[in-house]
Length: 346
Ligand SMILES: [Zn+2]
Image (tube, rainbow, N blue to C red; front, side):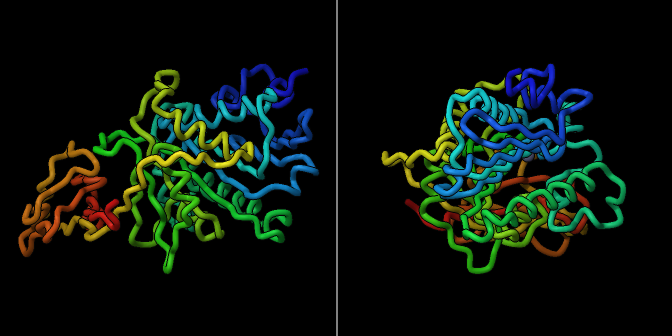
């Protein structure tokens, strides 16, 4: 019996199994090279190198996709990397936890079933308004599985660095097709190796977040991981993605999983942006002066009015500012967008 059949029965692979009515779970196999593969729950695969290679592991990685169920390209990337490894095309060289975030939403081809899963982490799933929702249960499960993964003896006691990359695609167009978000932490410092990895993955822009959040990557940051949300391009249905747009991230992740040395060629340095202003719907005749379809990272000149209400208005300061995630249709008190400036021009 092939390893794929042992793990996923009649399905062609992990993704096909997760999309089916009866996804495989609670399975365990050992590959010819000694790698141990476990399916602890639907949509989760834990990988551990053989004993010998375990000692030479340099890192542990959590890779997630499908936290929004219709963001199919990243889901297909993780599925492909796993299949390659299971077929013996390369050997695993680090501890890894692969996650397909929201299987019911993936099956429905929708962003979520009841509520946005990527707002429910850091315990937000316990709030009464989410009680009983499938996404709240899923957030609790993902939190406990990540805690277990990062807390295991072989990682904790050796102080192995843990990285988490949460892969997304977007509905909104962006002036910068690929960008990373780095969760807020007091006194954070981004290692040069992480910036080099973003470059390697063709991600030329990094946005430093300015406050605590309830996203998946903000949660794993609190577990001690170096975590990034990666926005990789546009949303398309399963099977319709042009994977040449995702070659950079796919190759970079394969290189990390198989323990290859980082490339030495110098791509363009990553441009870093930070938040200068959080646009909040004040509820008092609030008007967002940015069009609904404004692309992320649209640039506005000094003095441009971005929003106003009956008391006040916000204008771009002395240098141009860039908008991300504009959304006028949020309830009063919630975020309607972020204004950015470059942190370090290169
Ligand atoms: Zn997303």
